[in-house]
Length: 497
Image 1 (cartoon, rainbow, N blue to C red):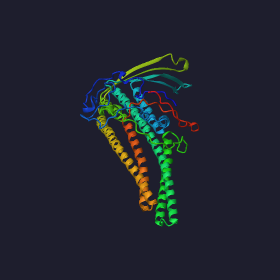
Image 2 (cartoon, rainbow, N blue to C red; image 1 turned 60 degrees about the vertical axis):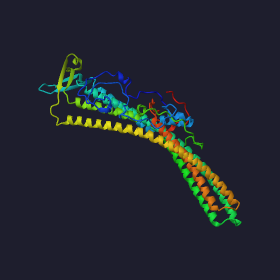
Image 3 (tube, rainbow, N blue to C red; image 1 turned 30 degrees about the horizontal axis):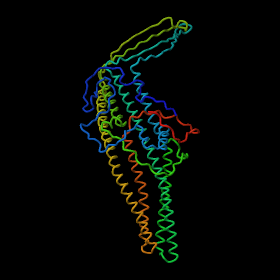
Image 4 (cartoon, rainbow, N blue to C red; image 1 turned 30 degrees about the vertical axis):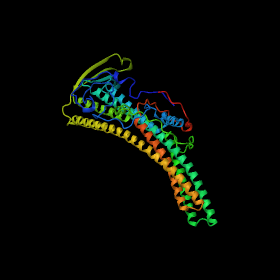
């Protein structure tokens, strides 16, 4: 896999080294957009996403571990590390985001070409058929050049808008990679939980069949009634249904894991055996809300699109001003190829083009650009609020899920003790089988619910890592794998940051 790193900002030089272009024109203040000027053509270093609200309180919880860009390494799980590295290199959905980034870069390069000289080669010929016995011919060849003087900075504004869109698309790519890593981790632990459910249900089915055999033996000697036998057979059938559901869940999750790692669902990957679900790593340090805006790629993408909209407004306003077009040509002609380059004719012209009547089209373009910028402002505010809500919601879920798991653990232990006591009483002829049956059902249901609760706690923590992740230096996905040479899943060392 090609691991060569490539800058994601659309250029090989830092943005702060870009030359200043144009001068400020009719600057429109943008409120809390911290100095983003709607019609300014100046280029400033890339700012950090601002906090669009006057006061935002700290998060309701704080961890002790530093927030890592490669968040999954905090779990210290080689299987998870291998799956994430495989997915980041071969997932097809991530490739879509990557190619979208390449398209944005190409568009930015197209905008840059507008400020460069255009040079074309021309050639042709003419035949004069007059009164002469033989027609005369003339051959022409030459060069034509054209250039627009960026008098008001319109071209520079369009280039700046395209550059900010490249940055936004790069952040979209980072967000897609972070989301993919969270999906891979979630599916992996869901698959492990499904395997554990398989083993648990298999054990419960064996227990229920053994109890059924005991009840049938007691019925044969008159120590139990037929209703007890039927109830136990019904429990065995219900447990077999649970087993079928667990088997189906395992196969579906195996398909999902294969697709996330870039493989067909029919392909057999390295199997996932049942193992205890991992304990949660320490809670990462959340920092201040402003720190979250510095990291999250969706917030940074929304801010970059706001800056792009600012530049688009400037370009729309500047398009209403006159422009200067320069053109020149150098043409040579001759009747034969031997005398073609003996005579040259050169021209240089300049035109001042100013819009007079366009039916209000340019004014409407400005109004549209301003409306789109206001939409970008609102979108940025909405993304910021959603980021805050997502983190706070996940902190609440983790806190209450931890208490729920403690409650389920206590209930499961009590259910086991209750079943054991009622079973012993029944064997000694001092209890009713219906009590034993109810206790057995409660115990087995709580055991399954306990596994599900542990998985849910893990999923909440994974989602929290995804909500806090950012600052990635994402590498380009690997080459498209050939169908006959598709690599297998194996553990690999994490690339250096």
